[in-house]
Structures are given as C-alpha cells and as structure tokens.
Image (cartoon, rainbow, N blue to C red; front, side, top):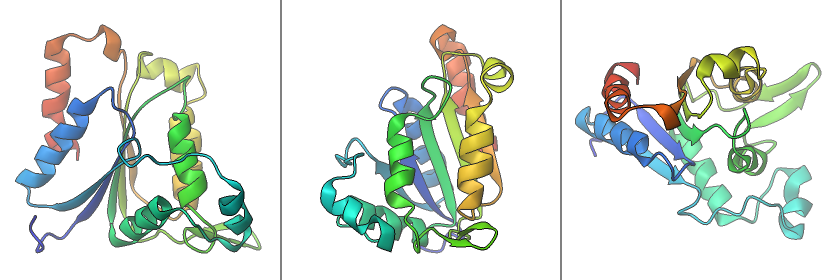
Length: 192
C-alpha cells in the first residue's frame, strides 16, 4: 500500500453473500494506490451481543472486547468509510446494528450535550453505504420507509459526526442478469 495516499479508507464488509462488490472496491482502491483497511465482522468472529462484563462498562464508554478496540482505532485513523452489506427486512442487518451499538461508544464516538448527540467522528469526511437487496430500491425508499437513508444515514451516521454520505443501492439483485451485475461492478470506478 502506498503511504503517500491522501485518503485513508476503512471498508466495513458485513455480507458474505456479495463478495464481488467487496473484491471490486478493493481492486479500485489498490489501483488508485489508496491506503485502506478491511473489516469483516464474520472473519473476526465479532460478538454482536453485550456480555455482563461489556455491559458493565457501557456507561463509562469503555470496552473489554479486543475487536471493538481494534475497530475504534481503525475508525480514528480513517477519513473515508465504505459499508458493504445486504438489506434485510428493509433495514440494516442485525450485525450492523450491533457494530454501531458496541463500537460507537460514548466518549469515543459521541457525547450527549444540552441539545442532543455531539458526534466525535468528524475525521470521517466521506462515507459510501453500498447495499444490495432483493427488493427494488424504489420500493425500499417509497413503501418501506427508506430505513437505510432516514435512520442509518441521516440519523445514526450524521449524529456520529460523519459527513458527505452517499447510498449506492443495487436492488432486485436476485433477478439481475450476469451482465447487469457486471455493469454495476464496472460502474463503481466512477462512484467511489
């Protein structure tokens, strides 16, 4: 990896189902000689549940989970972030919710002020949220409340201090042709 790159990315990859997107994004970043780290919660055996010890540390914004400590360090080093996951039941998969719940600790990622949450992850200046779904994207946006946009992006990520967040959705993936999937992958060069 080039250390002269002006961007430091973190790829957070939650879905083992659509590894082609993850692979393509890595190829694009390598070709641009941009430095990045990849997080795969499944490979890391990330424990999405709070155990008694971890829960006792919650109020102080502390953690005993080595994966959480590692992810926090990577997030502080990054100025760009890419989430890659499949939409489940019109929303983020449970493991993403757990990632937010366990990693975005008080004092690390935010504090609560007189008027609400004050995000500390202002170092992350650009975020791409790349999703796939069996539902068409328009259906998720119009009939399902657009949870990815309205809750995950416009509430959660923005409250944490992240800016310039873009949602790239590939809907109807289960009905897509090999040609359409290939075109989508090729289009990522211009999108990220």
